Amino acid sequence: MEIEHCIRQQADLPQINRCRSRIASLKVAFQHVSQVLELAGNPVRLKILLLLYEEKRLCVCDLSDVLGMTIPAISQHLKRLKVRHVVASDKQAQTVFYSLTSQYISILRPLFRTLVTAVGATP
Image (tube, rainbow, N blue to C red):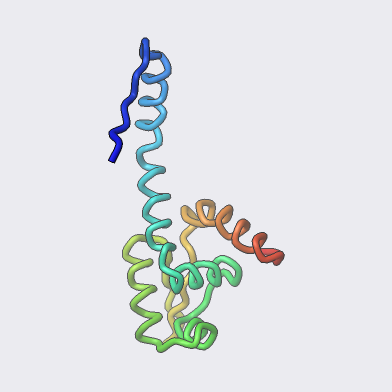
């Protein structure tokens, strides 16, 4: 295996400092985006997130019917999303509705636009 090396004559210190500053200024944004991308990396959760994005709110039964999965399985995915504050719940009588939290809608919007554009649909 060949070892890679970096050989440069002189470091561009202003550029390096600018990049460090930029990364530091985006620390919280990196945490939010990486968190939601980690959760959306699961195909079932990605489907749940897309459905909540498009429909605004759905209950566990709705998601179970659409995805053809059991309610406990859907509930486990929603629990992971809720713990990370990607989705919020709103109980009305005996039904609990789930929706995306506002801070994650803006993060997910470009992802879903890309997803539906890839198949020629519109979000």
